[in-house]
Amino acid sequence: MFSPNRKEDPMEATEAQDKTQQTNNPQKGKSAASVVALVLGIIALVTSFLPIINNLSFVLALVGVVFAVIGLVGVLRGKKGGRGFSIAAVIVNVLAIAIVLGTQSAYSSAIDEATKGTISTEDGSSTAAASTSAESGTADKYSIADEQMTGDDYTTTISGTFTNLTDSQLGYVSVSYNLFDADGNQIGAAYANTSNLDAGGTWKFEAVGMYDQAKVASYKLADVTGFLRCYLTLAVSWRGGKMAQRLTEELLAELLEAPDIDTFLDSHQLGEPSLPDYLNALLAEKNLERAQVVRMANLNETFVYQIFMGTRNPSRNKLLQIAFAMALTLRETNRMLEAGGVSSLYSKSRRDAIIIFCLERGCSLQRVNEELYRFGEETIC
Image (tube, rainbow, N blue to C red; front, side, top):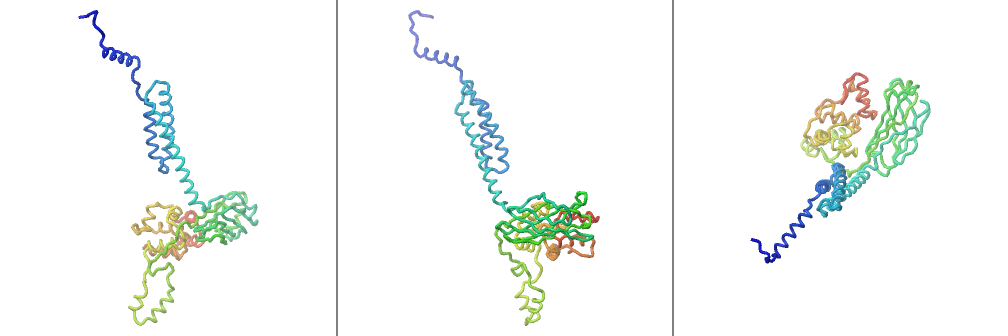
């Protein structure tokens, strides 16, 4: 019952005032844009150190910045709450972008440093006629001079002098020339390669193409590729501790002079090396890396590593791919084939004769495949 003389309770007045303020100023929720921005920023930040993946991190962080700015604008206009939350989203995304840019710059510098000695170029110069001797311009890593073309009814040879202008040994170098007829049509190519070219060293190369020289009117340097020796060569030991085996004549002389067979066998570790031993010894001798062999042989990386570890038995063609990738000689190739338990190259075989010809002239894997195909023989790969 209402009493006109009843005094108002102070607590009731305060509660009523609070309810009025809550009605007039309802609590504002956090910006959904800021929440999305913070989630994107955290993901981008966590993955920003990972090579390749951080390309996606950069995109996520950019999107995150956009959402964070939208959320922060809403907060500043009083439409949403969570000002600190929005600012944190901006900071996290900007930090992720900065880390991605920094790490990618560092990775790029490391890659450039590792490959600074790699030569790969295309030269636009060409001879005006087959009889013209072209002298290529000097690059910062190599020079080619004294080029001339010779040949016969079956081959065309471009010879010249390659100089290594780097301050490091080149573990592998190859040159290739495009060959043209009188109408300017490309009719073939000539290839040559070598290994272990010392700093400042010169290489008298002969790039050979199996085309009638009379049909070749001009030529052009198409490509030069080289790889630096970029790792420490470790001592490789197998079957006596050296890559080069002793001459058969020397062993025979020691055998004949030995007092008994036990003494001779105890002092010599005889026998052919296993395939992995021989391949790894060749790597060390030629200053190559397995990664280079993988690239040049056009084989699966895991497959090649299994061959070198002895856990995979390759076919004859796979071993031939490796032989051309490593620029092996005929003797080295046959020893590798024998170590792999397959038949060696036989000059009376039409297909093998083509392969032998290309091996001895330093042709690339692509080139030998072209020649096999041209003569209607099975290609190596």
